[in-house]
Image 1 (cartoon, rainbow, N blue to C red):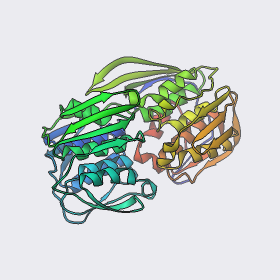
Image 2: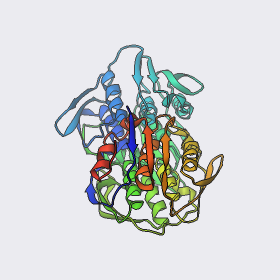
Image 3: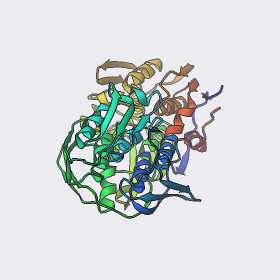
Image 4: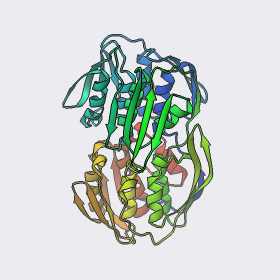
Length: 441
């Protein structure tokens, strides 16, 4: 069946070492930041997914020269606001919220009109959250209901702003940070805790940035118009992609896995903290710093007697992209797991909380859902032998990958549609699954 996978065999035990693809967040940020440097930048282990390819296509349309070499990408930057493009240019961000929101900030000084569009899924998502602060800088934006498509034009007379980011959205925070690069004076941001890859990259490049951390918020100050030279950057493996293999190992009998060179940035390891509280055997080995980011090998070993969790809400932003696979793990844990304050989960590629509830009910798990919370009544001995079809999930790559993990660990006969959804973030997913011994048609 075209663009579908058929799975009717559980995965046998395995003991392997593997690499997963490069971190998507860092791949996109490296490319955008390199475009503003003066001279050549090299990016190693760049994720070659649709989201990253769309980033490179957008930069090429903006007049940036990009070459693919044997083992790295080369970007020749023209300095701050060094773009050269035609009037009424259209940039297609595809499925990438990171690209769409961050490039709006990067283009805050663009003199010609630009149209920003995306696919059906991205066009449903909220952009008012970045439109509002970027308007304060002086960017002129036209949008219907705060969603794509967006028409915008920059301004030569930008004003630094003071901005309070309340959602815990790294995309919103980073969009403002990129806008600050081209703005004279000091931009100040008070941001709820979220991923800090942009801050780490800016610090690594010695930008004039000050960061003061508190328990719930970070205070960030950026002095704009700082020129910088091209730089080389090695991108570690993506923990969000690794998450599916971590749970696959935990739910497979007598299995062990080592995933090499994974980014374990503190703002991204919520899934590890949550799973360990549920009695998962996970260890970090060979911990080191690379380009300012914390990197490690992750060692996973399957076991029994996983327990439920009343998940602390301060893990939410650290695990926002991994909750689907965490919910699947909770379905096999003893007791009732409770997750709350998950509004942001429905602001992703699909309404993930709603889809998770539908999926869990399909496989026989009792759940209680409220507006932004879910209770999952785990079944440690859950085994499936029926026929299951997964479709109509807005082509959300994480729903597809979660479904594959469920099929390989729970049994049953599965047809999982929209395989091409993984191209946006992890095109090698099926290849890596087969490396562990999975039988997939």
